[in-house]
Amino acid sequence: MMNVLLLADIHGQLGKMDAFLNLKPDFVIIAGDLTQFGPCDLVGKIGSFIDVPCFAVPGNCDPREICDAIERSECVNLHGASFTIGNVSMAGIGGSNPTPFDTPFELQEEEIERLIKRATAQMDRNVHNVLISHAPPHGALDLAGENHVGSTSVRDHLKEFDLVCCAHMHEHKGVVEVDGVRVVNPGPASEGNCAMLTFGDEPGEITIELLTV
Image (cartoon, rainbow, N blue to C red; front, side):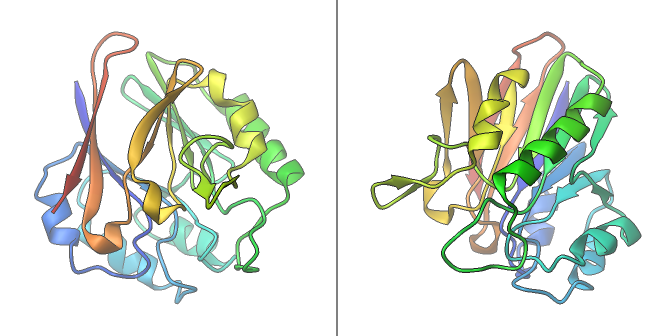
């Protein structure tokens, strides 16, 4: 059994990091927007709080150079990549599909598709298979007014995973199930939100607890 802390949308606000780490996770996942348009050296500060393995993807509000900063930090960069730890295999896609706001790390759907395929091609299938995506899948935790604004490419790959961890839409903290796959947005860590994920020994043994510290 592994207990995993899921953070997202930190936006450079580090005041809750000690409280998050007091939850004693076995490892940490950060689903993007580590900074608020930079600076990239904040990644090193975030990593200095974390004394367990940490895996991260960039968000749309992170500068493009954030990937290099993650590589230089104590965190593992999962953007377009995969990693296995114990009985959990993860693939990652950072940034977001285009928004009306012209944020720094936006990708066309074709690029998101290419990066997800690259990550999953390298991924070792496991007891639990998880996608870490800053953008939500289209149709899940992605409403802006009456419009679904999530990524269609992420949605197209949904069934390849047991769990999708996403972020981006601050107002859509929650857990939903789509086509038998659970999707979780922990809510913005900048406001003290997080989720604890517990992965059991058997397929499908995943519990999700949304928390505020």
